[in-house]
Length: 125
Image (cartoon, rainbow, N blue to C red):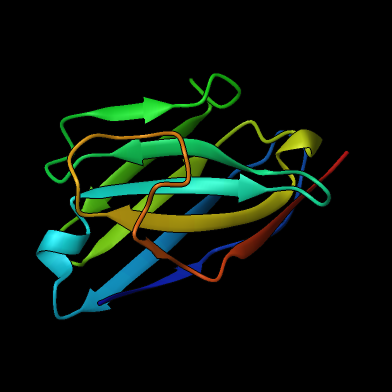
């Protein structure tokens, strides 16, 4: 089992920045967090993929809507994955979820084994 806890959400003005963190813990950590990703869900909408990263950090993938604004990274020594969000827009407002999967490959669907509880990000215009 792997537990994921997100932090760093909050209220920010458009054009501002936030950095989200996701701390992982558990007995099968190195296996269960092979792929880490961030998703987001706005009110009344589906949960959408934002960004993903492989174990070594050598491969990342972003949704078109956030590419060149958001940066995903991970520090395996700290069992933490980050999402640096820059040039935030009101449409980035959502609950952001951290996810992990043991299987290889970054996928943009909800096929992840573990999920955090989410952290709210609100961008005001």
